[in-house]
Length: 363
Image 1 (spheres, rainbow, N blue to C red):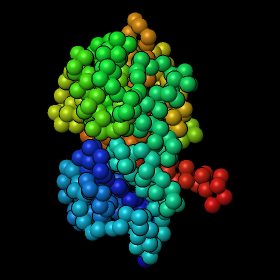
Image 2: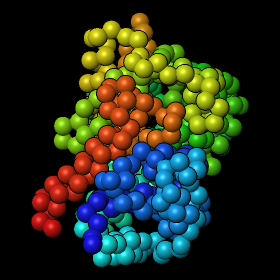
Image 3: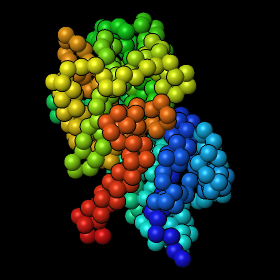
Image 4: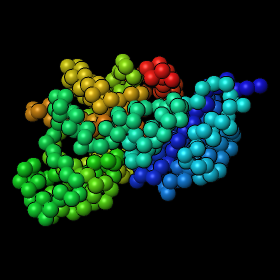
């Protein structure tokens, strides 16, 4: 007898510095996915780029979600990456009658930046999240800021530089233009990896060197004295925004350790603000989602400069973390959508988008 459930292929791990975050996110998605609706195939990508069906995870899952570890391991039966999706769907063709949907829980470069999304488009497989352009655009903070500015989204002052443009005089020039302190970050990275708060010209020089070890583009931003506000967006053609949340960092700023290791930050959900302010930041989040070509899901981050410039767009994450302390699922839970309902909606949106695209392209 064939299996009518949707075949959910969960891609996790990856080659970016956010590998561990992805493995943790995947473990919690697998726990929350309804086994009555989904036949789950976990596929891990190792730090060196090897693809594998995570057989140990599959065996643990067969025993029940309580048997799953806190984070998955990207090891198992090796697959040639270029044939991975064909291999998986072909192997399951005689076992399932429902559609296949890929959930790319890959944070950062070579996963969230349009590369894997392009492979999935070529394989003609529905997948959760933004398409190639939206993924690449949101991942590249320099380009995202240009598009945001062109569409009238308010944001902090910044400078984007390529590695060859950085000279010995660059740090002092940046301080003269933007003041101190400055935030220095690689353009194509997430989870605050490679981000430094620099308080002197020398620290700016060192921070640029750190950022350029992750990417050849670096973004330098003025430090905004304001509250950190985040909105979760869900949808395709008619997206909707969650209640806003506020991050109270446990460290000097909301860095990688604060997000995923120490759990020192606190989240206020909903964020304390007036009804008018809530409507305003939700509208800005939906505008950012639209102009940056978001689809499926994104978390849109703002600074709130009370008594000053108000809400300032910071960035959009097209594959936000799904760990227990991640803001995206927490914001939707506070908005009345449970973790498992969120997975169901993301799968539905992936199928809807795929069907619409195939109608538009004639395939």
